[in-house]
Image 1 (tube, helix red, strand yellow):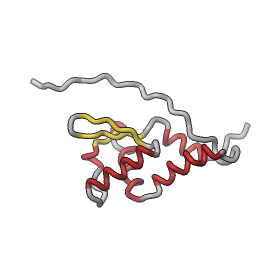
Image 2 (cartoon, rainbow, N blue to C red):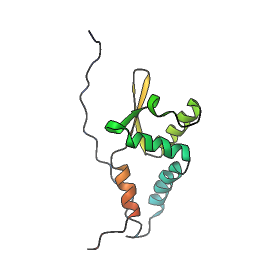
Image 3 (cartoon, rainbow, N blue to C red):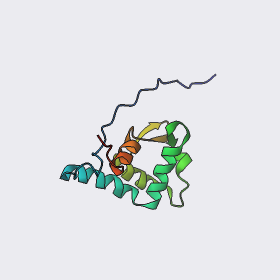
Image 4 (cartoon, rainbow, N blue to C red):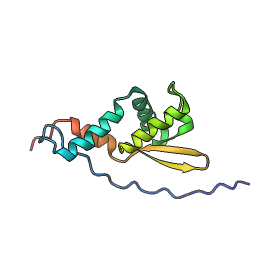
Length: 121
């Protein structure tokens, strides 16, 4: 007999994209700050590997125990995951002794849209 409790899944909240496509108009100061923070976080190879591991993990989320094999110590993995969270790229949830990470809804689409050419009207 199991003590496990099944929790209902919540629908992800809609996240507004950070900015318009770069070809649409120049970014204002606030948009540039927010965008630079996201890309700066991904500018580190370990962070990019961790972000990719979470984004590509089955079910859209990954336990830290499943993604920490990136060639650095566990405290360093935790530091990089914290930086990705601070940049708004990941969210996390503690379940028992493990922390599960997921890519924030619409982050990949928003980052992709930022770099694509605006659609012709």
